[in-house]
Length: 229
Image (cartoon, rainbow, N blue to C red; front, top):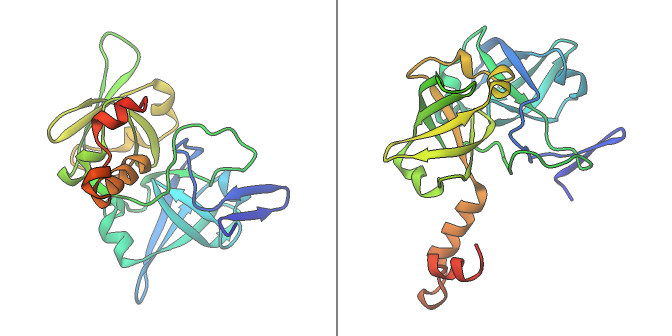
């Protein structure tokens, strides 16, 4: 049970998120250190629940709070994290999506999000739907991630749990309701901005099973359909 960390009367699963954004924080600064960078994020609400060593999802990246003040928290960024996430675009004033790990006694909204970025996509646009109040979000994605993305499946973009509405050769589109636009950093993104992507963990495990099992027992689409999937 090493993934469960008690905090007073609250128990949270240390590395399990749901993609339901709890607060939009503001980058207060990025400090270059000898071997890494330290990211400081201003927060008015989530910081009240954090203590040193706690996990927190910052725009879909699971980080560890190493310094906490009444109005902010800081986390160290390894060079690997900086190179393989959308953090290369952030600067002081940038907006980031924040989520604390799932509470053990909470309802499970969204989907299973680990905070382990699979790849960086490119923000194309967030366009208002002329026939309704919602929006269309379009994101280009690396080709190696497309096998894990399916129509009506789940994906985390900048830490937000979203449902895929359209899959094309090099991009995906998602229907975004006004509430999601209001409580996330989506409106701060500009065309060409990198965005963190984490595909559905279930799809990754299914692919692993298909390639590691003997050919006679491999999972196929037909077998999945026969089993009711």
